[in-house]
Amino acid sequence: MAGNRVPPLLVGEGLRMRAATAADAPFILSLRLDPGKNRHLGPTGADLAQQVAWMERMERVPDHRYFIVESEAGGPIGTLRLQIGADGHFGAHSLILAEGAPRGAAMEVARIVYDFALCRGLAGGRFETRTDNLRARLYFERIGARLVTDDERHCHYEVTAEGMRRFLAGRRGAVAAAR
Image (spheres, one colour):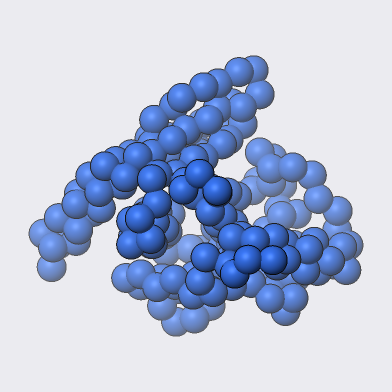
């Protein structure tokens, strides 16, 4: 297996994303089993051993990393799966934030991922959500992605390197103005 081009730690302003371990399985499962958070995700069972086994299988997938999103204080506040495709695009999937996650956490996750992608010279990113997941669709548009295809079940979005740069410039400007 080739080396993993997704590092085990990505750090932003106030949040960090670290590689998930088997010890994180109860937290991940709690998010996956939350009816308010999982209605747009694939079904999962309540078996902790199955969650750990799935995580172990994902660790062996080249250029794929399952992250725990942590607050500045170090507590887990969410999850994200990130992968790099052979075509030089990344995929970011299943961002789930816990109740009580800091305001703006989803935008900071996008900033962290975009910083990483641009530093690695990736061509852009791809996202998918279910058609009825309006919240995710609005999020993708806010982070500069554009709808490229949709059908009765799924919407597919893409962001270019230029779109990531525009998003980051806007975010940095907002941060600088707030200080």
